[in-house]
Amino acid sequence: MGNKQVKSKNRSITESPSTNYNCARMYQVYCAGSKSSNEYPPTINPESTDFDPVSPLTFGNEIIRNVACGYRCSFFLTESDHLYSCGQNSSGELGWGFMTESYQELAKDKTIIPSYGMIDYILSGDTFSFFVMKDGTFLRCGSNSEGYIGAGTVSSLSTPTAVTNPPWKTNRVDKISFGYYHSAVLSNNVLYQTGKVPGSDVCNEYKPIDAAQLKTIGKIVDVACGVFNTFCINDKGELFGVGQTTHYGESRVWTKMNVGRPVSKIFSGSLSALALTFNDEVMVFGDNGSGELGFGSEAVHDWTVHPELSGIGVHTIGIYTYQTIFITKSNEVYVAGNNTSGQVSQIEKKNLQRHPTLEKYCREHVGMIPHVTGGFQHMIVYFAKDTRKSLRFQVLLHKAVVNHSLSDIFIECGQ
Image 1 (cartoon, helix red, strand yellow):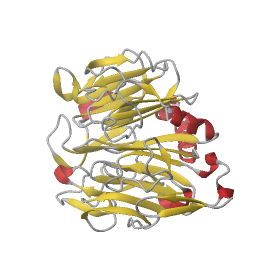
Image 2: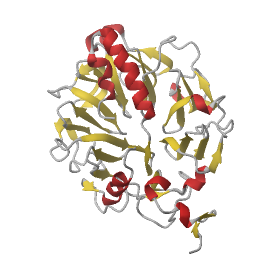
Image 3: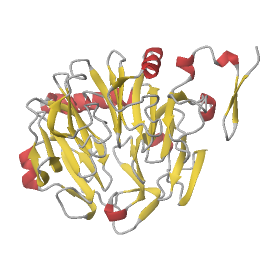
C-alpha cells in the first residue's frame, strides 16, 4: 500500500499508512467554516463540509495543548513550546511585529514573545489577542481602539506587551474575557475593565469596578463579556450583570439577575449568553437572532431554563459570535446558530441539533478533554490533555482550604 497524499489548494501533505492506523492518536484538531482568510491551516479533506482534521504533520507531529480562534485568525500552541498562527493580522492581532491587510498562511514561532514555554493559554478576539502566562501575568496585542486592551492612547500593539503598572499589582490574573468593544480582567475576586465598558464612560486603561458596586456583588469568581454587557458570578453562585442585561434596556449599575438558582459558569457570545447551574441546568438569555441559544429563533428577554439541554450533563459550551457547540459528560454534542459558512457544519437550519461527527471524535479521544474555540465564521474543536485545569484546581483547592471556602474552586465547575 502506498503513501496517502492529502492535497489542498496551497500544498500537499503526504502521510504514511503506518501513521494512519489510529485517528484518535493521530488527529487532535478539527476545523469547520470559512478558510478564505487563512483562518486555519489546510485540513485532510479540503472539500469537506464537516469538521475535518488537520494533519499532525502540519504542526511537525507535535502535540497540541491549546488552540485559540480570533475573528479571522487562529493560534496553535504545542507541548514542545512552539506557537503556530495564521489568518488576519490587520491590527497586529497575530503579534508578528507588523500589520498587514493580507491574510497570513500558517507560520511557526513568528509571534514575538520571549518564551512560548511560559504561555499557559491564549485568547483571541475581534482584532486583538491575549497571552496568559503561567506566572499569572498576561501580554496582549492588536487593536486598542477606544482602549479595548488597556494600552493607553496608542491605536494598536503589533507585538504582545504587558500592562504597565496593572491595578491588580502582583496578584495573579484568574480570567480574561472580552466583548467587541471592551475587555475585563478578573484578579483576586475583583473585576477590572477597559474600553467602551457597559454602563460606564470609555476608558483606555484597566480600572476596578466601583467599590460600592463590588461590595454589593461580593467576591467575583467568574466573568463573561458580550458586545454590550458584562456578566459575573459571585462565590454564592449569584449572577450579576451590567449594560444590556434585560429587555428593559441598558443598566449603568451592576444588577442581580433573576435566575432563582446558584450559577457555576457563565458564557457570552456577541448578543446572547448562557449559564450553567449547580443543578445541571443550562440557562439562556439574549438576542438569539441566529438561533445561537438553540432555543427557537426569538429573543429571550429574561434568563430561562433550556428544556432540552438541562439535566443531560452539559459541561463544555463554546459560544462564539453567533454559533454555539454544547458537549455533555457522556459525549453527546449539540450545535446551534449561524452556519452561513459551514462553521457548525452540515446543519440545514438554526434549531438545536445533534452532531454525529463530533460525537464520534469525542468517543475516539478517550482520556482527552474536548475544547471548543471559534471566530466569526470558523469553529475549531480540539482534544488535549487537561494539565492546565488540574494545576489550577490544585492551586484553587489550596486557597479553599486556607479560606475555609469551597467557593474558590467553583470557577472550575463546568469546564
